Image 1: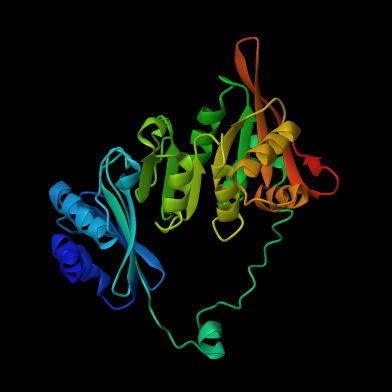
Image 2 (image 1 turned 90 degrees about the vertical axis):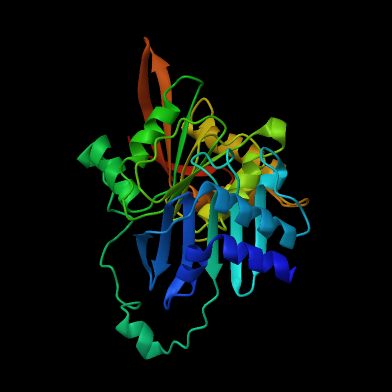
Length: 324
């Protein structure tokens, strides 16, 4: 085990050196040569000579720490392991679309007092009423622009070919460039413009499920998670992520209306929820996690945004406010 840990650290020498820098809590390798760090809460891109071969060797060594082999195009392409005081999540290409990727999270013990929080601005009130900051009166463009900026979680529904993914790409284009985005899809369709990104590709035939990748994404320090299409038990894990500090995500789902999209989502959550979870708890989780549903339909050969609703809660049924 010690040999495997040493081999892992040696394989990514410059990356492990970055992890040792004071104030660094995360080191993210999005692909060979594409390295980012989070230092004192600020994300920055770093120069590091990380090759395809060195990353592959590091991930294989990491796998040995868990008693398995790293195998491309299989469930063993995803590795989670602890190395000293670091937690490492890694994934081999082609599951990672742009090349082998890994994320190192370092445990940092900090002695913070209340005065330190005050000095850091942690107690300052934003002064923004988030209930009214997005206004339909501003029109759809400004409405969605503000919704993305304010980290609203948006579900896009519609039939096949209604333009769901195209619209999600338009929303992705509004994500600030200083955020880290992880995408999960089964066909490469999402166009992520931010520089700090990891694109993950499921492969059901190889045993790499969307649910596996949603769980992996939580260990790779995402600011936002975007799922190309929710169609199975991964819905449960995704909503848990949206509801526990990863708000501002996006996903699409097949449905005939915004209202029915939420009920279909509940059905998918049931596939992944622990046995015995009451349906009322599932509806409550959805109401807490999804801010808006945007529904598209085809009409006369055109793709039309037919409705946008705000999810306000659940009481025997979803409480929805028609926005657009």
